[in-house]
Length: 248
Image (cartoon, rainbow, N blue to C red):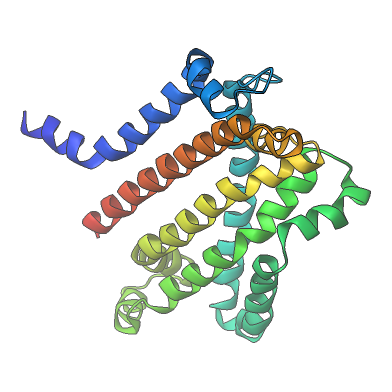
């Protein structure tokens, strides 16, 4: 019983938000009368060009691919510039990561469409660049925050530089790194909606369609699903971060 209570306490909130997301994804068509109160003059008040489940899966795919790219680039870049042979590149990597987030994603989309065409690819590029900064910064902070005495002790035990990185620095920095990943992914869940402006299929579809056609019901449906997805993901990563902290 105690174990079940612990599981419920740890994973209860993420499961609650995930349940709300799943229920909302499949139940909107049954609430037509409620949305009709919001837009009584619209012929159609439930977005139906694509199913909400399909849009959710597409949204998750875009964010997942972009997050994977950001994590691989961000973590590897931060590791590189914290090694003796890469320290000279630290300012350059920090500036590039900062530019990726300060440069508006919509501008990245506009510039990349002529090269990559419409759809998912420009969206993934924009999200990958936009998600770099939190990951790079937190990875740098996590690795640089490892006690030098711990590193020296590991080297004194005969560990190679790679073993020190893999067995000491990264495990000790993991919670800080995951915090950056959490921030990056949560931000990009909302940002991915702009991909619908260039033909990518996301939860931004009903939002954009609602804005274009003056249909507030569509906008609310898309916004609710994006918000619930962000809350579900953020709470899940928060639980993982706490679990990592408890194991240290």
